Amino acid sequence: MRVLNYINGSFCQAESGEEIPNKSPSTGLEYGSLPRSDHRDVDRAVEAAKAAQDGWRKLTHSARAKHLQTLANGIEARLQDFAQTESIDNGKPVHLARSLDIPRSISNFRFFAGAAEHFAGESHCDTKQVHVTKRDPLGVVACISPWNLPLYLLTWKIAPALAAGNTVVAKPSEITPATAFLLSQVMDDIGFPKGVLNILHGFGAEVGSPLVNHPDVKAVTFTGGTQTGKQIAVETAASLKKLSLELGGKNPFIVCADADLDKASDMAVKAAFSNQGQICLCGSRIILETSISESFKRLFVAKVKAITVGDPANDRSQLGALVSESQLQKVANYVDKAKQSGGDILTGGEPIHLPAPLENGWYYAPTVIAGLPHDHCVNQDEIFGPVVTLTEAAGEAELIRLANDTVYGLSASIWTNDIGKSMRMSDRIECGMIWVNNWMVRDLRTPFGGQKMSGIGREGGWEAMRFMTQAKNISISYEEADHD
Ligand code: NDP
Image 1: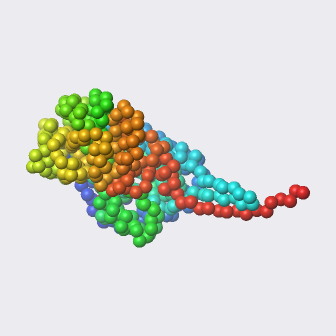
Image 2: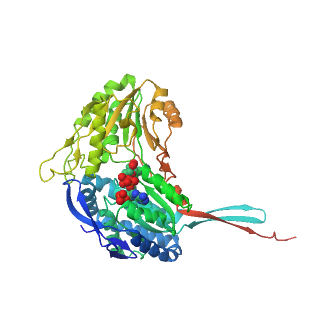
Image 3: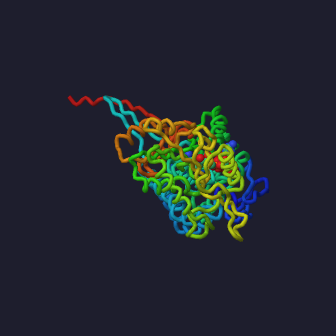
């Protein structure tokens, strides 16, 4: 697949004329390329988005909603194609892309089409005075997304930006560009208005950085690593751009003594290893109340040992390949550090070698580690792979202390049948999202985002629509009629 940029309604190569090879995680082999764009392509794309702004913002809300629905329909008509492409590009099982990534991308457009129709300003009335607060679009918005949920996270940003009347320059991760390219094909097929959504491919330093620094970009919505997020915050500070940052996580999965251990261990497997552990919400630190620690461990490890890692194209594979060779190496390095520190590898702990033609693919066994101190880097750093740790805590206060013993604050999962305990713990755990007796239940109306080093701002529902607009207050005075 030869991926191209999409600027002002046209497919084009990068100005540099250079291309970046694209490898498939399942085989480790090159299967396509993408343009190596730079600041010149950014200038063209931002110019196109700026020129399209007036026409797009002047559309009625219903007309904008209709365009988003048409985009959703276009993806839906090619669902299987999108799912296979996402799986080849990212290494995730095709059934996951088919049941989660692509349907969610479609829902993102449908949901924010609805938001475009229903979002409204406010008015406050007083004697002889009415204050009307409009929500105006910002202008050109930069949407930058990572490789783990490629189309899902890109559309989660694009859809509210467009719904609110902005035009967009989007940059998917250079590691997983393929479904963003399919999205531009859909736009082309349906005749989506030119310049309203432009998609650029290339390296973060060469495209992402000039994009966020461009003076005509009025807001940046970014999902990715904490280091990159901090860099973007520094770079955009001088221009006071609006900024939304969804960053890393090291989320606690807390199992209290009174929890249903069978259900908790089932969900812990999903929370730790879905998408090969490459979801920002993954429960990568399992914290167990001491009295049930051994029973949970037995149940959990047996379930992890039963996971099938295999060809992402095969519907029987529960886990596929890690996204890149460097990600595989990063995971292996952390597991080595755990081994060197005397960590107990309860299962996994090594790469998996599949037979030809997958022998060079990037597979790693789901790994469970116990016995590390909580300040060990394996318990503190975001590994973003199929590695989970088990730690014991003596009671409620210690569970909370360990849950908060991290620089991150994205999400937490708490397992207990004591409603009082669940509320007390939810009050004190420092993070943006908490699931009680569940994990990763999403409702697109609810706020999504983290505290501490997990980011700034919230996505989802009205939070996203407010971020993507700016308030303008108009106060109108009038004389009272003299009817006497
Ligand atoms: P990165 O931060 O490396 O990259 C994210 C995106 O930013 C990519 O498109 C990247 O391009 C681009 N980029 C890199 N440098 C710059 C720059 N200087 N200016 C602008 N853009 C830049 O993250 P990963 O792709 O490695 O994704 C994994 C991370 O994403 C994990 O930390 C994970 O927790 C986080 N994440 C957070 C989520 C949340 O909602 N909180 C959800 C999902 C993931 P390129 O790929 O070319 O480098």
